[in-house]
Length: 52
Image (cartoon, rainbow, N blue to C red):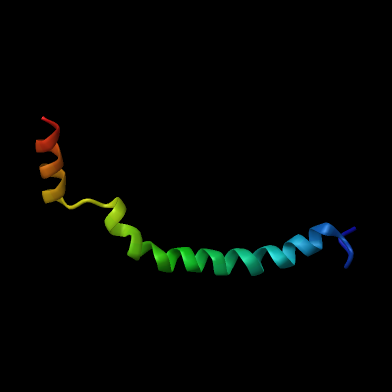
């Protein structure tokens, strides 16, 4: 059923070998990009003042 030549077996082996390092890389990169996505309270107040 899921022998050595099956696509399922290949996906079960290769998938984690690609997915785990990619996920670890993204987790390690996240703090570097945090300033682009997370605003401080002072920045939010300043932006709100500019909108009005």
